[in-house]
Length: 177
Image (cartoon, one colour):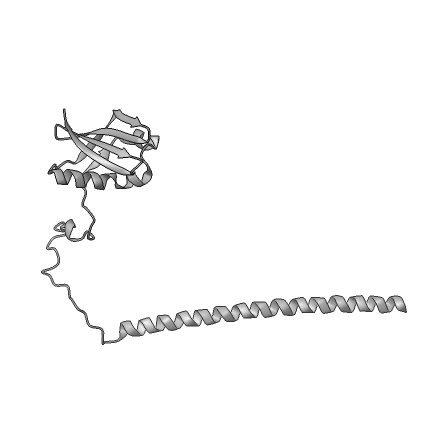
């Protein structure tokens, strides 16, 4: 009898613990579901408010597009009108800079701005240039500083670019052949 009583007690405890686990799991899931439902209802309200605002006839259009503003032909767009303020329009580009890029001598953040800074320098000097061809044999590395030269195609000028790693600055100069 005692053995049967112990077995029933063990079975009862196991059933009770399984029930507790099931109840705990169910209440956690139901709480998570309630949270998700409340969040989604909040988003639905926001979307409804936005759609109500957009569909209301009280919205005033401050400026309408007329045919006098739009270009007459597709290719008649002036890019400088659409550039954000402070962005310089670049016409220069570098060719054959693979070796300079692969060497990693110039950091990526400087590579990202070198074209814009070069255009700013050349525009300030009154020089119109397009293609700048990197001279592979004319690179000087002094410590952490790098100096290289580029031929300005279409002119007899050579652009000298120096990068100072200590000050993280680019310096430009013009040489004649």
